[in-house]
Image 1: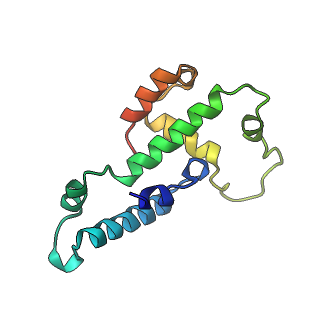
Image 2: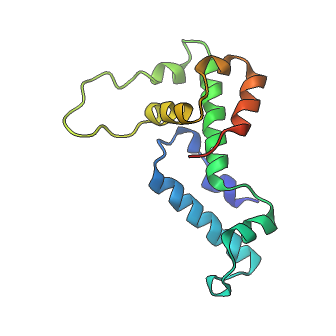
Image 3: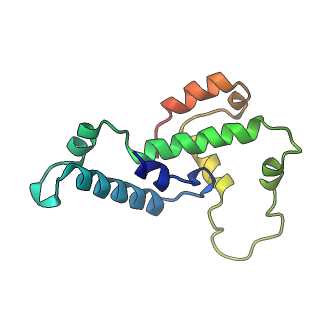
Length: 136
């Protein structure tokens, strides 16, 4: 019960990429197997181990946390510090691929889940929408 909050602490602000999600998934399964007394030598599938503990996959919770925080930020007024900080990198970037930022990863997440931005203004409808969002 205490491991998942520790793994996802501050994940609302991470610019998440595939490597981060895979590391979280691996760590969670190691802990679930350890707490269930199941080793890889037992050849028990991860879905069965997860089903015996009745926990949702960690990418789903990660997506839900990030979308929940996005809704909080978008509902605040324009003078709020966090909302003003979204536009901070104003200088021109150098050559090469730009690094992944929170804003770019959120835009990608919103696009893949077909979530419109104005939906965040109504808290209850946003809450029901993000609980149905598919993790990517």
